[in-house]
Length: 103
Image 1 (tube, helix red, strand yellow):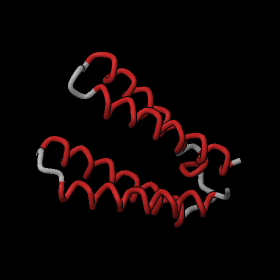
Image 2: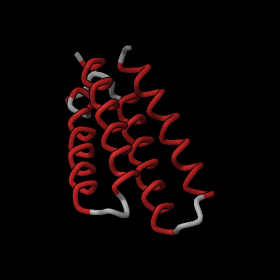
Image 3: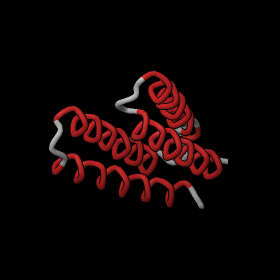
């Protein structure tokens, strides 16, 4: 998969997260989903605008950091364990796709 394809998929993922955030009833979960959705949309926009920039080539590191932070959250919070574990796996998948595409 190339950088553009990953960015387009990421934009779709971010848009989906924003849509879900609008219908989630719990305020805290909705805020987290909205923030994450915005992050993905912005990251996709930067990648599409500057596909050969240093920021684009290293964007996968943001996903790695997110994955690691979610593993930490899963380890300390019983309430957020399931969503955090799912977030860790998803972020790791985005990191792998972005890293592969940026080579």
